[in-house]
Image 1: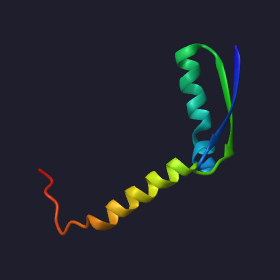
Image 2: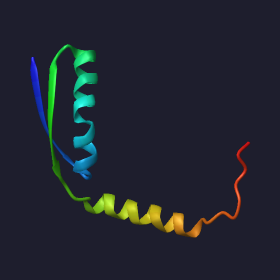
Image 3: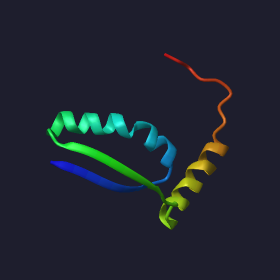
Image 4: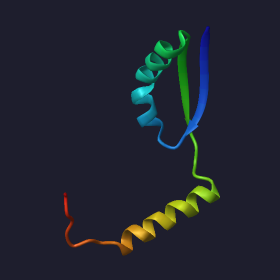
Length: 69
């Protein structure tokens, strides 16, 4: 079978760089032929709020040192 997916993504360039590898992996697992078309999408309101919350926490937490053990 030929599977063609049209998928909205935030970072089209990153997905386009890897669509051949993604198709090969899925073909190996399923035996089907996969192809992808990625299109740009924006963050929705819930995602935008979550992103801002993460950024605020990251700004507050500025460690002076870390332990690698």
